[in-house]
Amino acid sequence: MEADLSAIHGIDLIDFYRGSLTARRLWALVEDLLTYRAHESSLARRVNNDHHVFSLTDYLLADLWELKAKSMSENAPDAHPWRNPEEAEAEAARQQARDQKMIERQQRYAKPVTSSRGD
Image 1 (cartoon, helix red, strand yellow):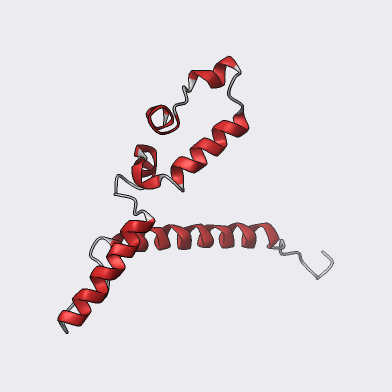
Image 2 (tube, rainbow, N blue to C red):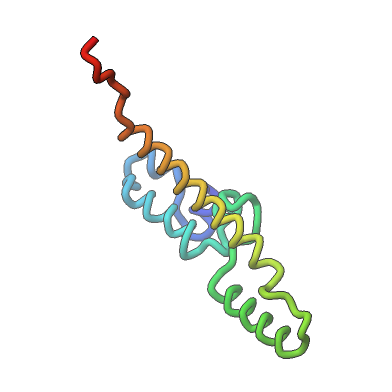
C-alpha cells in the first residue's frame, strides 16, 4: 500500500503519522487504489489473490475477443479465458458473505424454546 501511495499518488504514508494526511484522505486514496486504479495497483492485486485485476479496457478487449472468437468458430468458449475465473471467485465470495449474513440473522432472531406447560 505504501508503495502504491508513493508511486501512483505521490503521497508518503509517514504523513499520516505526522498529521499532515488525514484518515479520511488516506481512506479515499486507498479506495481509489482498489477501485479506479486497481489495474495498476499492487495492493489491488494482493487483495485479489495475486490475480491481475481487469481494467475497463481489459473488459472491453475481452468482450471483443469473445465476439470475434464466436464469429469465427462454433466451438469458441463462452467468455474470455481470464475473465471467468475472476468473476467466479468474486461471485463465490459475494455468495459466501450473503450466506454468513443469513446465518447471523437467523441466530440473532431465533427465539429460545420455552415450555408452555407451566412447570
